[in-house]
Length: 271
Ligand code: HXC
Image (cartoon, rainbow, N blue to C red; front, top):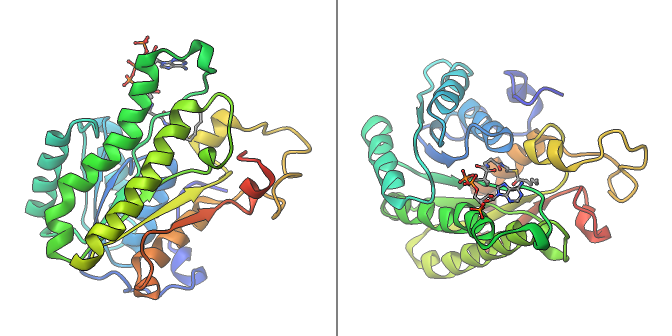
């Protein structure tokens, strides 16, 4: 299945075409496989978007391609931004508000990860992943806070299921994502009175993503045995969870993690 949404999403999804007219989404990691499809769904449903990334060419190309999905859509790509640097994020927010007028929705999706056992993981390697995944998520919130407050917005963090069990080779990312869940919950409590919602999505084994390409045993005939729904998920299924959470259908939901994993973690499996 191609990792991009076409116009058919508007016919096959349960959502209304103009659901997000007038809304603007600010996304870190938006050129990556999961976040890109989330943005595509929001843009197809009427939103404008700013995609934030480290690599300028990749980020700008993704923005240009996503912008072509809907006539009149405004999608900007802001490259050269590292989520570990809150000042560069603040500058991206200024550019977004300057060009698109506002920010209603935020997806904190930028992540860094690799497989390494603790014996081979340096202190700096651990810090690097925690800095990208956890500090980067905080910085993304911090930089967008004024816009979220002004527009009674909603922030979605991209979490994981790695930390629900003790997963070898992932001590750095598991610790970081546990922190992301905690950050998300605290923001829900502190910011609820301001009308800001804070939630997370935890993708499980999703086909065609960078994580799965690096983690999964693609040719293993038993690869679905420990997935209760007996298949990998799709990026469209992550997009649909995102649309639901940003829509008014979830207006009383904050402080939650939506796990989109076919039931995998219940069996102790993340791939
Ligand atoms: C052990 C490693 C390592 C590896 C890097 N390091 N790769 N240690 N095994 N495979 C160590 C380095 O030696 C260094 O420690 C420290 O980590 C920092 O490395 P840098 O290359 O200087 O960091 P940086 O350039 O900031 O790059 C960050 C990165 C990189 C996380 C290492 O992979 C990256 O930018 N990734 C972005 C894309 C990405 O990872 N996406 C995955 C998302 S998918 P020393 O001690 O030598 O200084 C996902 C789902 C799960 O999250 C995927 C599971 C694999």
